[in-house]
Image (tube, rainbow, N blue to C red):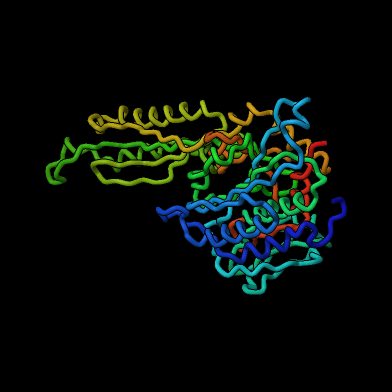
Length: 425
Ligand SMILES: [Zn+2]
């Protein structure tokens, strides 16, 4: 396992096959999965997992694929003496690709000895991948990388995760001398449209905690996401016939404009925050002179800050109305919808799952890079639905774009990390 050569574990070959199957999800669809074609990859995975020897592999009606890598030790006898119970770990990857960029007719290209020179993608010469734009490429000079051909994304997000997991399963099944407990594999549709966790059968999965293989650069480990609410601010004006509106009309559109103008401009918004800072972000405004609704995204790593932000928006809106005598009969109100929560709140209760991953990184000689995700993942939802879930690197870069690329050795290192995580010495 220590010498890494082309296609060791078969992970690059698998990735290149999987990306050729179009599995783009669709945010406007109301069906599940959002696109039926995702099941084409699900079906292929099902067959491959069975061929590898995972006999219980199954695809359900929603397109989720689940399988168990059987343990090579009896978890009830062999280790029951020293640990109370061996945890059942689940590894998870999503099969869909992002709606932002075409995933039809992906033509993956393996660059066997990347030279460091700009890569002009053959199907669109204006698509050029350079070290200047992606300094991380420097790590792969003389090594293998995989790109698309210029007209589509690559789809390493998250077929790299899928390829890593199938290769990992195949590796363990071919090396029964490696001692490990039962391991669950889960492949989900519709992550990119935020619905990947919707129909996971957690009972059937029956795992203690999990990891998604859906992270970027070597070493990245993610266990913290935003907590997120949506807030709708409603402004009720007072209508009158414009011909006889003097002293009567209080126009909700004008009030809305004043409220937006009263929001902080150089702080508290996405364009002026980074790292651990939260923000509020107006995303949509709809209505007319009688009523206007403004939608906001509310984000922070500390869940308790969300309510503070929401109250602050309400107070800004109220003071705009109260300070202007022309708005004295207008009304403002807010409605808050919970979106997702910082998975760290759950993961902090399971320190062993962080310890397990980070000690495996160390054994593999990889320095962990732990950074909060300024967004949400399926892991944040899964963590609150009963499966604490952190995120492990795959190597994927420039995702959701025609420049998307991945270094083969990063995927191989991810497999090595997984092997160290499950191995019982
Ligand atoms: Zn992803």
